Image: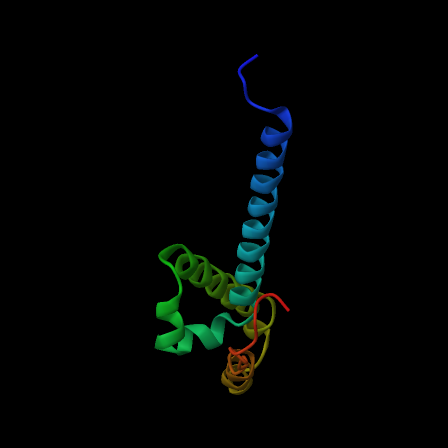
Length: 103
């Protein structure tokens, strides 16, 4: 016997599990918000600078993937005169950045 109370160990483990769960939830929701509003974030320097380097890399990759998807699936099949209007409407979504992550 090591002299450590098993109940104390169990309580510490539960607290660690709870903390990890909250941290993972926070990060998952943050990435979802970045993904949802990536064009608005990219256009605003202040918002872009709030992201970590890893989040900026994630946002850039998402933007490139979406643009490539739109180009291959829609824009390449449209006449040239419609392409700029569609690109502008996709990118123009604004976000209420005052919303909390956890509500």
